[in-house]
Length: 375
Image (cartoon, rainbow, N blue to C red; front, side):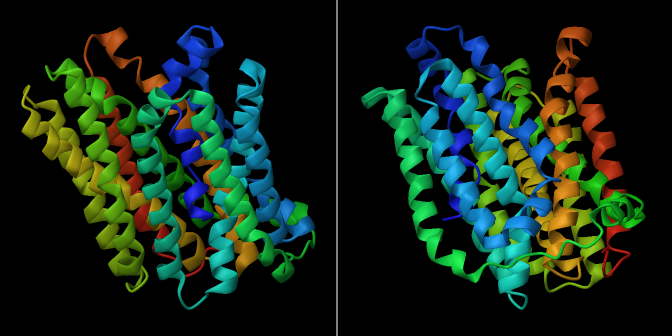
C-alpha cells in the first residue's frame, strides 16, 4: 500500500485539471503549477527526511507521512487555497516516503532487497496508471471533489494498514550530524550518484511531458499523442518488475554494462525522433524504446541506494541527497527545455540536449559501479 500511494495522489490530477479549474472558477493556467509543486517539495524535503527519521524513527515517520498525505489530499477540496496547501503537504509526505522506503527495505529485508524493491515500484506504477485512466470517467460521472475524496480514502486506508508497524520503530543514530553531511557532499562516488539521479529524473519527466507534443508537431493527432503518452507510461510497469530482480544478481561490472546498454536505447530512440515521419506505428516504436530505457533507470536507482550503502541510515542519507538534486532538475528541466520550440521553431535543440544528458548519465553509471559501497 505504501508503494500504491507514492504517486497517484498527484499524478492522477493533470487528467482532470480542466474540470477542477471550471469547478473553482479559475483559468486552468492558474493551476498549472500544481503538477510542479510536488516535485519542488521533493527537492526541498528529500535531504531533511533522514534527519526527521533520526528523531522520530523510521516506521513512525512513515506513518506520520501517510497521515499528512491524507490531510493534504482532503484539503484539496477546500477551494483554491486548500488545493495549493494540500498539494504542498502531499509533496512533503511523498518526498519523505521516497527517501525512506529504500531504508525500510534495507532494515527489514536485507536478503530480499530486489524482491521488495520490485513490489513497491510496481505498485507505484500500477496505481499511477490506473488512477490516470479512471480519473476522467469518475469525474464525468460525479465531480472532481468526489474523485479527490476517493484518492484520500486510498491514502487513509494505507495509513490504517501501516499503524501496526509503529511498534517496530527503528531510530537512526544522531552523532555529529554536521560532520556526516559534509563528508557526504565531499564523497566523489556520492556526487556521481547525485549526477545520475538528477539526469535520470530530467530524462524521464522531460520525455513524459513533451513526447506527445513533439509527435503532434511531426503530424500526429492529439488523440495519437495521448496514446503515445499512455504507452510510454505503461511499458515502465513490466520493466520495473524485471529490473530489480536482474540488477540485484549482477556484479558491479555486469551492472555497469547492463544499465549502460539499456541507457543507449534512449540514444537510439532520440535519434529516431529526429527523423520520425508522421507515422503512428513509427512513433509507437519510439515510445516503447524510450519508455523501456528510462523506465529502467528509476528502479535501478532505488535498488542501488540499498546495494551501495552499509546500513539503513546510510541508505536514507544517500537517498535524500540524490533525490533532492534529482527532483530539482525534474521540476525545472522540462520547463526550460520546453522553450526549445518557441525560441528555435523546432524540437531539435531539446532532442540534442537529451542526447547529451544521456551520454553524461551513462558515464555516471559507470563511475557508480566502480564502488562496492559508497557510504
